[in-house]
Image 1 (cartoon, rainbow, N blue to C red):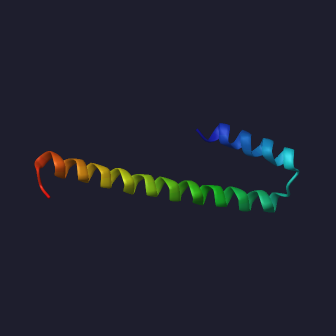
Image 2 (tube, helix red, strand yellow):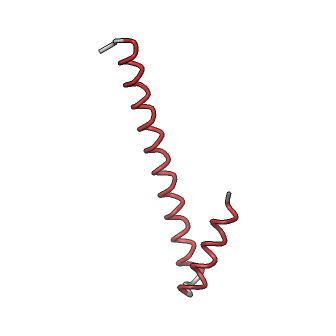
Length: 60
């Protein structure tokens, strides 16, 4: 799963000719963003499941 991501990052690095420091900042920012989005998605799924279960069992 990581390989295509690394290839894309390397391609972007060559395309924009960015320095390694800028690239590491971008990568860290991207990873932090991914974790944030993943966390939010998990919370959303848990909320939806709890609502569905409450409706199924008739609890208000």
